Amino acid sequence: MASIEMKNIVKQYGDGFPAVNDVSLDIADGEFMILVGPSGCGKSTLLRMIVGLEDITSGDMVIGGTRVNDKAPRDRNLSMVFQNYALYPHMSVFENIAFPLRLSKTPDDEVRKRVTEAADVLELKEHLERKPANLSGGQRQRVAMGRAIVRHAEAFLFDEPLSNLDAKLRGQMRTEISRLQRRLGITTVYVTHDQTEAMTLGDRVCVLRKGVIQQVASPRELYEQPVNLFVAGFIGSPPMNFLPATLDGRTLTTPFGDIELDEERAAAVAGRDLLLVGIRPEHFEDASLVDEAKRPHGTTFRAQVDVTEWLGDQQFAYIPYDAPEQIQAQLRDLSRELDSEALRTQAVIGIDSTSRIREGREAEFWMDSRKAHVFDPKTGENLTRDAEAGARLTREAEEDRQEQVEEARAHGGGISGPEGAEVA
Image (cartoon, rainbow, N blue to C red):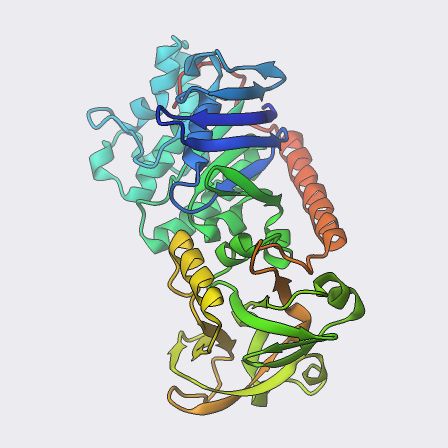
């Protein structure tokens, strides 16, 4: 295992466009780091620079304390799992997993031992003699992971490994990858555009936008303390609602009623004419179902429901609202960038599945104003982000990660000793 340090990494192509722009990121030994963002944000390019498949225009890539900018992929001792599995169709599962060991001329007894151990970890022992064409998508992805495991590389690199699987298999494979990483305790960098994968898998998540890091934090901190509109809109499903607001003293006036700010938040937003209030769908409720003890902590309002979606265990109501043209234009641009139709001038409101609110009717809702974030529409900055709370969440995530790494090391932290240098 090894730490990975990126120092002011830049990747420019022939036209001068910076696909990755001044990225500095430290990934600790044994950490599970997620690189996430919309298409074109530079996450896969950054991963390919770590493994050596892309040249670095400027900056330093340091793995295990050694600068590797000029090292070939085979000399970096990293294992990479690709989106398309990259399996050899004429080889058995056993030989596909053993392939990097064959390249490094590992003795047959050692090959057999490592492949058998990896197959046991991934529940592939009964499939070792089969060909890839006879396996399911999830089994093929496990074979690709097995090929990475047997090499005992310094780190695992995953490039959107689950994007070709259906929704059910993605959920299963997420669990398997998380369990495997905890068991082996190996440094892992995982690229995805799916924020659900990012939130469920990583110790920390690095959110990228147009080649620039927006925020690096634990999943909980990203959710509770996003630094700007982009992160707030990207993290969460459905995404955060953004409502236009004006400030009068400590009172924010929104299309859904007034929000009273505490003294600290009021001071942070003072002096601005137009603001954006961000509040997540799950922080609303059917007013008739709100506990009386919670009611004073929020705002009650009435609104016309356009559409409802009942999903069994949850329900959503869609409520249009009016907004100034500059806010509409900003939300349209953000919606296009995040490829999300939800970020328009309509609120997505989560309500209990037992609610009898119906579309086409006016209904009364409750909004938890304690959970509201206030953003500057011009800069996108979260003006009310609690940096102290964010630091606490980061410390808690780091403590949890250290416990997991120590537990993995206590149980062996792998299958055998390091060998090999080919990208899996």
